[in-house]
Structure formats: structure tokens, C-alpha cells
Image 1 (cartoon, rainbow, N blue to C red):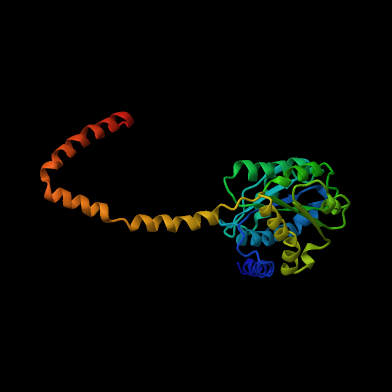
Image 2: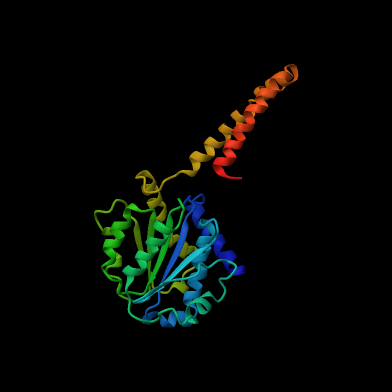
Amino acid sequence: MATIDLQKKSVKIVLEKKQITHVKARVGLVLDITGSMRTLYKNGTVQRVVERILAVASQFDDDGLLDVWVYDNEFSRLKPVSERDFEGYVNRIILENDLIHKFGRNDEPPVMKDVLKKYMQEDDSQDPAFVVFINDGGCKKTIKSIIEASATKPLFWQFVGIGNGNFEFLQKIDTLEGRFVDNANFIHIEDIDAISDEQLYDALLNEFPSWLKEAKEKGVIKELAPQKEVATPIKQSTKKEVPTPTRQASKIEESAPTKQAPAEIESKPKKGFLSRLFGK
């Protein structure tokens, strides 16, 4: 646990620098598992990527869970990873699982649609989603329409190109026009093992704060929680400060016992009616 504790400290330093320590978000990781990624899976690089992104989830997500997908020309939505079970996750959940399609060609749109399905349809949460998308080149241009269509959703796509593949299209993401908000960013890291944790987190979270600000201003992210917190204590205080009616009732009961009988008689048919209406 020592390594991930250090990574969590590095994340916290970056969050403080970017003034987003208060942010709550769901965190997803999409992993390229095409044929050209085989070596990175075998030598432990992908496992280390999972651990480093898990540290981000531990700071953003209330449950500390990192949602994970893998894709080539098919995709799989995997069991979320946490600090309790991250060790050996890639071998245990991905490489040793014969049901997961591995090392084929790349096809990004289907897995992107499933990410949107989970966060925008299936999950009941007001928190935005921060999705790290690992790719080693050759990303299909048809993701353009998905990025554009999801610009009105509380989800930010952070694409990460690793290695020396072709990232021509991903490098143009920031120049896509016509989006409601700028909801995607791309960074290229040739050797992800060669950069420090703090450098990685600083790059990953470079545009997320500005997206949060714009998304809140334009109503893409609904901020409901602060309103509830302000209203609750006011309601509680008004209820606690009205003991008078109960004292008056007790005085009436003591001074006029003859009036209690009709009240008791009237209350009985009401209770019987409710019990007949709703059952025992």
C-alpha cells in the first residue's frame, strides 16, 4: 500500500495547486488492448497505469472506486478496482480472463458509447465523470461525433496517447468546433513509466478545472448539494422552537377531562378507516 499512498499524496498536491480539492467526480479508465499493446500488458506497464489512475479516483470518488473498460475491436466493462483489490488486477481480471477479447484491432466508438451509457443512464449520481482514455495510436475519426454529442453531458474525456503511434486525429481534439463546452483533451506521453506521478497528474488534470467551470456556468453540471445543506438547518430550527401547542394540549386535558371521551371516540373510526384502506 506504500506506493499508492505516495501516489495519493501526489494527486492531492496537484488538486491543491489547481484549487479543486473540493470536487467530487466519478472516475473511469478505458484501456486500449489492441495487438500493439501486448508488450505493455505483459511487462506490467498497464498495471502501473491502473494503480496511478486509481489514486485519482481515491481523491475524487466517494467510494474510491475506479471504473475500468478494455477495448480492441470488441470491448468489456470490467469489475471496478479499489485500494482493497488493485494488486494483480490486470493479470487476474484481464489477462487471465478468457472471456475478454484481447489484442485485436482498434474500434473506439462502441466502448465510448458504453461509457456514456453507464454514467449518463445507469448511474444515479449528480457527480460529473472524469474519463481517462488510454490509446497507443490509430484512433478512429468516427469518435468525433461522439465527443460532439456528449458536450452537453457532465462527462470529460481525457485522452492519453502512449508510445510512438499515430495520434494525428487526437491532436486536433482541442480545435473541434461547434461543441457546447470543450469536453475533451489530449496529451501524448511517449513513455508513461518515465514521468513522475506529479508530472502525470498535472498533465491529466490540466484542462479538467476549466471544463468544470464552464460546465457549471452553462448548466451542464447541476449543483444541487450546496442548496440542500443551506436549507436543512433552517427547517430544523423552526421545528424545535415550537413547543407551545403541546403544553396547551396538556392543560386542556387536565382541566376538562370530560372532553377527552368524544375525542377518543372520533379517533377510533379514523384509525379503522385507514387500516381498512391500507391493510393491517
